[in-house]
Length: 174
Image 1 (cartoon, helix red, strand yellow):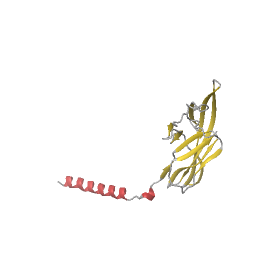
Image 2: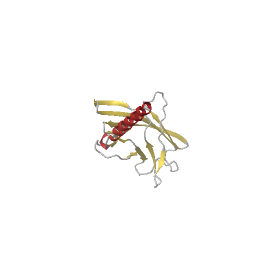
Image 3: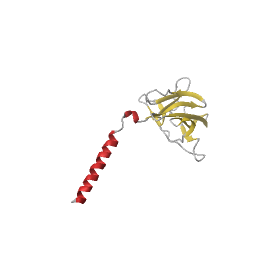
Image 4: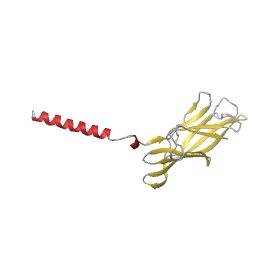
């Protein structure tokens, strides 16, 4: 009987401890994560260059992690379409992130580098363009978010630290 009472007591203590720990956090202790990028590529006339059915558009693509462990380190960047039939790349994650700077243990900047190989056919010849994208991330205990995006070394997106979570939309003009 004493053995049974000890087990019940231990079980009650574990249950109380679990309830105390699980109820002890609030929304302020959660880190906001904001890293989705929707990338549109258009020409100066506004033509969707990711719609392979349109003349002059890219018919195939590949994305590679420039920080990958091998020369070819593919990254999944699916091609999606809006309800208006406009194509875009959706980048969630997949490329390695390296520390760019550590201002303090509670404020860091990371970055990833991607290489986009965009191919199209001109005069019966396949032309491939290699473009680069650098994504900079801001990390603090309260937020992990995309802070800046450079495409071919040109800033195409910035976000302030206090901006709300959103799908980050980038339009590249080629």
